[in-house]
Image (cartoon, rainbow, N blue to C red; front, side, top):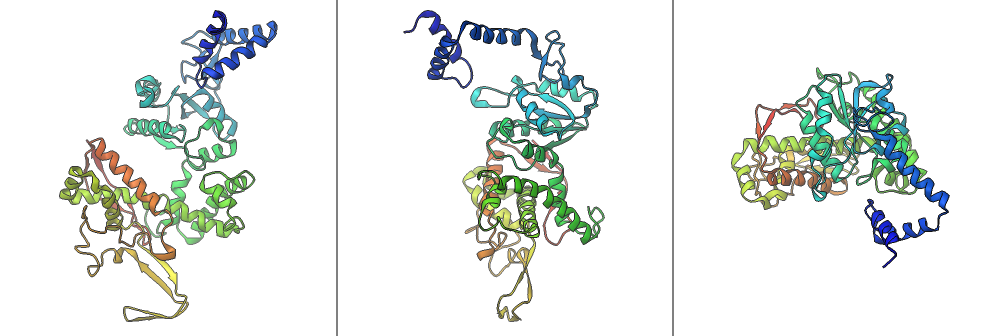
Length: 441
């Protein structure tokens, strides 16, 4: 055992987050070796922080000066900040990370933590009530959920989104480029800035890529407009691509593309093609399979009952939903050789349209093809992911996302009641659902 005073110091240091017994001992002996002046300077710094620093009574960021309970931080005192936009972060250090980007000019709300059942942290231990009180004034028009891209951050964002959906505010989430499982604190300024800037644009660009230019609600009215918008998307993502190329390889898709010998020499036009593929393939197809599954099971309540009684059917159900919905309607290919299919001659160089949605309803290959059957035999034998060398690279990820969604719905005993027929996207490429009104019980 150490001397009582030393042991007390080790014990106090060990109470700090991230400091274990060994680290506490090392720090304690480092402090013992400090000169008296250095040790007193450290003690004074801790004392001054406790005396002068408190939480901003508006946003719960760090505030220096003022009386506890009425202090305001520099950002809340700044009249130049946009009070109509509120960025919700977990900790005060996340405010610093966002400010470094110089892309955001609104105000903040600091939750002072994230939902973590393992650590006993629920919504009641965060500054959620205070957030709702701020929104009651009606001044805020957009809330940006800027929580960390990890399990706790995503859970917190989902919880807040469910609370805010009934309020007259737009709710957005930071977008591209942040590695899953990371912290905003460690994200570089360029990546975080692009994520803030892209929170609205990624979904819009995805809809630009697939919309019918003659539809009443089309975002673009000509192919030239479409190309110009998608070029903006490519330039936006190309900044991230070039930045990733200068850094050591990381485990995110842009870094992988930037460092792979197969893709790192692509022209901007080639990058445009592969980036649009990831944009649409990673967004619209999975999203529409989610909505399609809700609609399909509402039309076949007996199948929904089967799955509730036997959750082991979920993996097969996911494949069946993807077949039944067929989120991508068709693709066009170029014949490399002369061939004959179904008695029809095809010459080398001919353009061939592959109607996945027709193949997935082929009564000669699939029994009762127009029905959604939860326990269909060999459910993965469908064409929604293509076939051969053109098979979708993200097929397992899409199945995983949908499986987790339905597993969580069943686990939480959530009932989704469809209130009206879906409104479909006007497109001959994506079998998309624009609106599906539901009530969740």
